Every structure is written in C-alpha cells, then in structure tokens.
Length: 105
Image 1 (tube, helix red, strand yellow):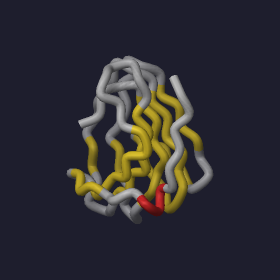
Image 2 (cartoon, rainbow, N blue to C red; image 1 turned 180 degrees about the vertical axis):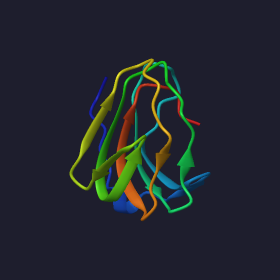
Image 3 (cartoon, rainbow, N blue to C red; image 1 turned 45 degrees about the vertical axis):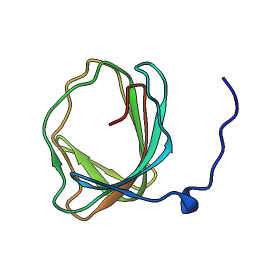
Image 4 (tube, rainbow, N blue to C red; image 1 turned 180 degrees about the horizontal axis):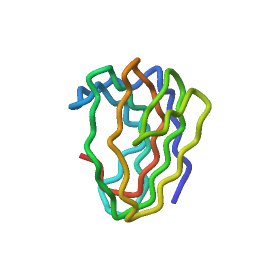
C-alpha cells in the first residue's frame, strides 16, 4: 500500500444513473477502497439495498435522505456491511464523499 493523492478539481466527472461521480481512488478488487465524490440530483431514488462491505458517506453539500432520516451538510453516515438501508434520495440535490470497500463499476 502506498500514498495516493490527487486534486478532485482535476478529475473528470462520470455520468451515473443518479447524477455524476468523480472517482478519487478506484478499486478493481473487492475489499479494497473505492473513494468517490457523488453528486445526486432531485431525481435520485436508490432503492433499499445492502452491500457486502462497510460504506461511509460524508455530506459535503445539500442534503441526503436515507429512509426517513435527513442528513444535512456536515453529516457523516457509516453503514455496516450487510445492513439493509434506503431508499436514498436527494430531493434538493446533494453531494457526498463516499468510501466503500467493494469493486467499483
């Protein structure tokens, strides 16, 4: 393992189903970290689901809804592997820093 560094302002966003994503570190193997900045628009509606890895979101801008809970900017959300959660929405738009331990798509 080494030290990885980049400037998020120099990363090209990639279109995703719910907005766009900037990959800061992309894992090609399950169990290794993937770090992203995800921008979700008002149309975001990710159904209830679970992952086989731990996941963390830090809300940078706007707000994110997970289930009945609203998380404003500054919130840090940690989700243990195997935990069923959602739906995930961002009715007013939201930007999160996401860390996951799974293979990125």
